Image (cartoon, rainbow, N blue to C red; front, side, top):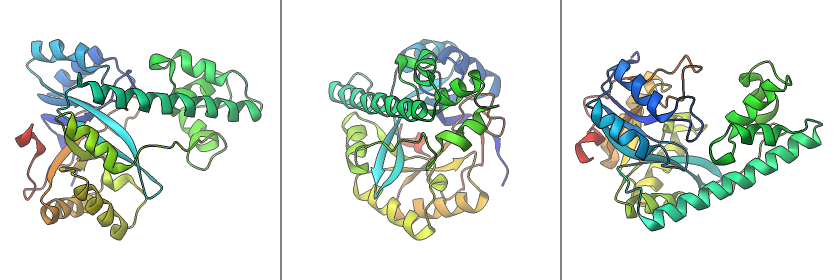
Length: 279
């Protein structure tokens, strides 16, 4: 099962979080890729949505307002995508603002750890290239490259930023159930993001999906660019078992990640109900 071009891509990032393309550039790239339905799902922010609305309409693209929210389940970081959310809903805006504050505190702690390792000024350099001045790990990685500390971003993660590395900081994210409730209250569809990417056994992944359903989750990301054929089929089976819808998304961050292309992912298995049907 190879990645194929699709007219639908419901997992995309821009420079509003850790993507490489501006919202305008992402729409232009979607046009080139033949995508006619897309969701912008930046991390804990919907800042790119307003800029993209008119651009998508002008180019005949249906835009789904989305977001990817970090949560915690049994000490595991879990991402939940919200599709079709009301970005102006006051409580939802407050929740996202709280998420950004958590990100800010994490970034400050990462900067402090790097300083203790003798690497000065990385937080300031990362903040200068990050949206809202709140850097994520890719911004720290770029700052380490720019400072000559690492040869590329991959090395920056391997040496300093990946889980269990010296500058990695664990964040106190809200519980999975809370995040699902935020999305539902904002009129959105809660989607368990890239389930095959978590380092979980199949048994524990099944428990995660069961907990996600119990919390009110409605959909799994089944067709993701980095999911193996076996994982796609396994997740499709979970959708059938739990009565969930299925989503598809590349998780595209930009051209430097050459192994992930906008609009290209495995096809949804025929047993799946596409989430587009309820958006």
